Image 1 (cartoon, one colour):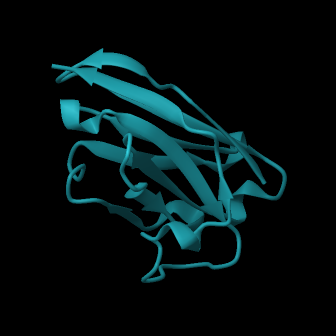
Image 2 (cartoon, rainbow, N blue to C red):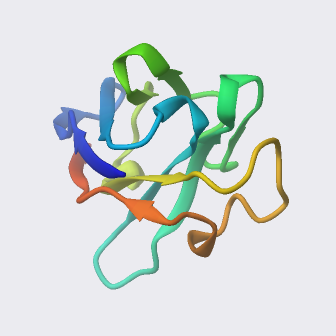
Length: 127
């Protein structure tokens, strides 16, 4: 699958952005989907994930209650709604997908779980 992330930009602290990631290729509904982020010189870290069907989501502690991941399988798109943004949310955001597993797995917060990655979209939050 090919993933294309968009929606990044510059926003003031306290503001909102919605990221989108559109996929082409296989049946989108069969994918587990996630968002990760990375800042300069640091490792890519987990932000949020959603399983096939959307019945289960998971969030990093740093974004829980502020970010919401959702999916629209008809539109082949996964979203990340980001509210109450903070300067520490500034990062390059990546979407990721995996076809191999259904349901919840313990390693879904790990980079190596996901077989496909988008190119990243930059979010800059100014204080």
